[in-house]
Image 1: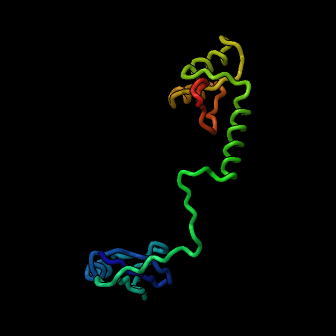
Image 2: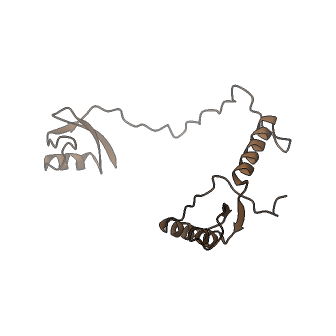
Image 3: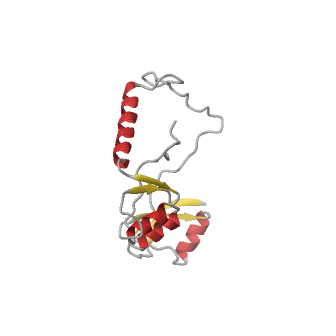
Amino acid sequence: MIVFDLRCDGGHVFEAWFGSTGDYEGQRDRGLVSCPMCGSGEVDKAVMAPNVGPKGNQLPAPVRAPAAPVSVQGGGPAPAEIKAMLTALAEAQAKALEGSEHVGKSFAREARAIHEGDAPERIIHGEATPDEARALVEDGVPVAPLPFPVVPPGRLQ
């Protein structure tokens, strides 16, 4: 395949692919090549820079070392900033779940029961399959995914 930059008599430049130069000329002569912007059939090759690959015997450019040394920590304690961020995230998660009851895999059943008045009203969180969550939303049960992972009670280390 070969790509040509083509130009119509209206000045539009566009790219087109052909099997060979002969294919392009044959299609142009039969009126099969037209400008995609204005539809003009008066199309000629535009000036273009050829795509020339590197020589086969050319070595790749050497990889340069970074301007500043890169610090890689392995196995050591995390920097204080990361510890502070993780602590803040854990505190935000705990506050978001404060007063919420973990109902585990029975979340869909329990949420529906609360919505229908068959269970006491309270804030709950737990697990639901995508199909269960979709059905709850379709039935008007107010649910939303939590924006963070939750470890069930008793499984914390």
